[in-house]
Length: 149
Image (tube, rainbow, N blue to C red; front, side, top):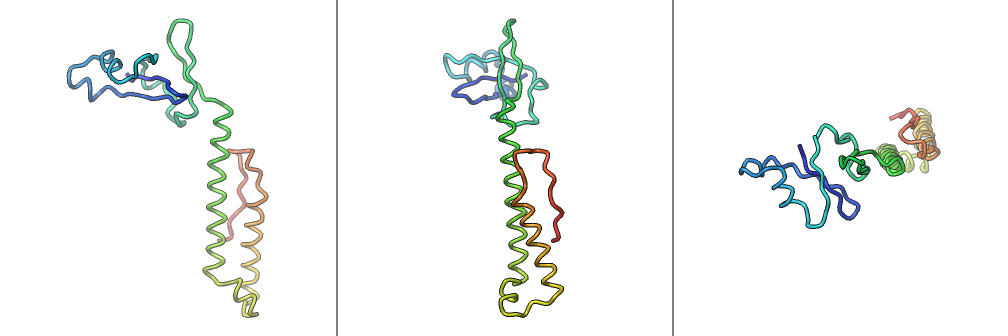
């Protein structure tokens, strides 16, 4: 069992195990751990949607005083978009680092880039263009381009 409460639009969880070892009941732990005037619930941990960050959780109090914790769909979608944006940026940076490690821009400017390297350079540039054209609003269902790296 855990103690859950919401304060300032943040959901907090208190795991009472360390306190219980000192002989306190879970209710006594809740009184000590939860700020005054904040409503709390004692719930079974298995009911928590721990596969998603707490910032996405919504506490819905039911008529019987128990709670149901759901995921805010709008926040979840933004969370997914943020995740794929980070991934896209990392893939783009990896491709750019690869290009620079091969010194292709300098070699091309000096006329020292082989035909094979020109082809590879163009493949990486095409990949970077494909990354730029991704519609990240469809997250998490992104069809990632295949990396030539």
